[in-house]
Amino acid sequence: MNIFIRTLHNKSGATAIIVALLIGVVFIGLAALAIDIGHLYVVKNELKNAADAGALAGANVLYSGAINQDGTRDVNQEANRVAFEAATANRSDNVTVDVDWQEGTNTGDVQRGHWKINEDGSGVFNPSDAATVNFTRTWDEINNDPNFVNAVRVVTRRQDTPAASFLARIFGHDSFEVTSSESIAYLGFAANSFGAPIAVCRQYIAPCTVGTMFPSTTDTAGWTNFSNPCRTANADEMKDLICTDGNDSKIPFGSEIGTVEGVQDVVYRKLRDCWRSRAEDRDGNNIPDKIWRLTLPVIECLNGNVGNCNRVIGAVQVDVLWMTDTGNDPHFNQAPRRMEDWPAPNATCTLSGQECWQSFVAHFNLIGVTYKQKTMYFRSECNPVPVSPEDPGWPPSAVLVR
Image (cartoon, rainbow, N blue to C red; front, side, top):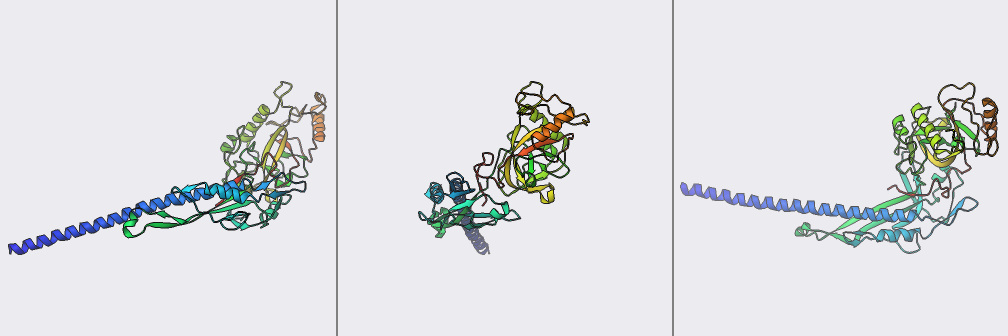
């Protein structure tokens, strides 16, 4: 009987050893899986970084020469080569990434083309060999023209040089072919230096240089927090954007930003204080007498109204001519007395407040405006919409969209 019991114990010990060995194999397999998956994740990220670098480099040189008199601009055929060289200058796992492209072509892993923005914010890339682009069109015309070159697509791979494995070699896997990584950079005319949290409605920037007012009975502009993706604007965050460098992130052309209509008292008062501090005061009486120029986003105001989210379709330079203060002013005490060369160089209006206001309105071609409290009077410049990439207030800037 004792011998039988010892035999059972011996078998139990053997089983424990076998189980331990099996558990060890499982742990080794899991370790191999974890290490190699982590390694492949790093390789994939490095591929993506290389594709991003190539797409951005190509998009930033997508056009060549100055804009032509007819509003067209030449597409740089060398953008593909620049993109290819930037991508292949990057390494993945200390190996040069694979990019399947031939010099002088617009096929394969490096392509110029059109990035169309859909209503839901997604986009579609269409290769295009167009030699020129035309900016003197509406946003919808440009967005729906598959031949309007505004993007560069780059694909990077690790197929010719697969990623090495580590512990997985124990199980016969010496390397892994890493699938391709794609990046598209869209020349979205993104801007990150708007001068004030105000967005001008497209419907009210033409005819050019005609002055208008904000707020008004119909929306000529709205307040914005520059949020992108769009987030409902509130007074506190917009107030903090005044007298700063504007938005702290780029706003891609064609995307939506958070907007709101109305007076927004606390925001307006701080903007007026900024205007007084930024606009030149040549008389030393704390009243501006020099036009304050701002670069502001242009938005599409559907049915003439500013909603909570509006699409950016361009940018415009705006001349702030005057800003009234809070409180009623039936005697036009806040009316301007001098601005730039009005009423004459180095002169001041000595008429009554109302007469000075009427002269000011006529001089600066303010159409259909009324004298009101808490109102900004401005005029826009003659830049087309969408604006030319030559506009210093809206420089072309490549934005990664995928």
